[in-house]
Amino acid sequence: MGSAQRPVSAEHLMFEAARIPAFITGSEAVMEAVKRANVDMAIAYPITPQSESMHLVGDLYADGYLKDYYRAENEFAVMAAIHGAALGGGRVFTATSGPGTLRAMEMFPVWAGSRQPVVCAFMCRGVSLPPSIQPENIEMSMLLDTGMLMLHAEDGQDFFDMILKAYAIAEKPDVHLPVGIFADGFFVTHTRDTVMLPPDDIKLEQYDPGKSPVPVFDMETPPMRITRDPLLNKSNFISYAANASWHQEVLAAAERSRKYINRYLGGLLEVQNPDARIFIAASGTAVSQGREALKILLREGCDAGLIKIKSIRPFPTEEIEEATKGADLIVVPEFNAGGWLAREIKAAINENKRVVAGPRVFGGMSIPSELIVNEVHQALAKRKTHMS
Image (tube, rainbow, N blue to C red):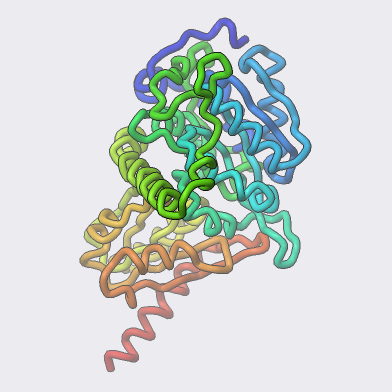
């Protein structure tokens, strides 16, 4: 029961406490993270494949791990209400997927603009082009410039750790921004895997809204801060200046999060075989497929390596540039039609003709490791033809 839990520091919970293995789904990993996060309030609305995770969070409420929980009338209502709970000084959690993300889109820059440390899990799925409930992460490309921090989980272990660590990152006074933790739906949410869990009788220390860089919504202490809309009723000059300066502060806060992501996640990316000439660069579940493809390439004698990108916002621009400075080829497998990660990498590095945007699959298809290997071989063959 929640009342039996002992508050501990984030460092103890995440790095020092002994862990034991649990064979659980990604949805259960979400529940286990929230159980230890000392969350005040969660608000839910069902949408596949997110529904099970928030159902399990509701069970946590019944067992006393949360102060409040309810089901709202739609996804926009969820995100608006969770925003209100955060404005009131609560530690909050919610989740959504695909079309739910799009229906709630207006609220995400509102979270960031009001500097609220909301933690939201996104179990990515197809959107209506045509309708699909199957795993793909095109919705991530639509959130890149909302102001939220974005972490992409490879598996259930990442999903558990990133949700807990998101609170430690988001609530730092010099950050205080929303964090989205993304996982590829079904591939992670409905797959069982071994996840190492700390004891469930400890939890994060309570959130202290007094350390917030913006005033907490308080009906008892005037003047009550509601929104910055009154600025829009004055001159255009005041409106422009206020909006521009605050927008820059939101972007600066995201940049300040880098040191905490490095601290809690061990870096914005991970590199395997750093001196390789050929890299597979991926995020989310595509990393796991990349690992299998790398094994094949190494058996074939290819000088290959792997880059796992954990943080999408802020994007590891300098780290990518450093990791790929000696590379001849960078292949970027993705679970979406648009190739948003390849575009981000191309924008981050010099000589971006080295980047191959693919293979890409969507609509619920998997990426066989052989498909990635073939992409490498085709790119090398094309390069050899051009050189000759």
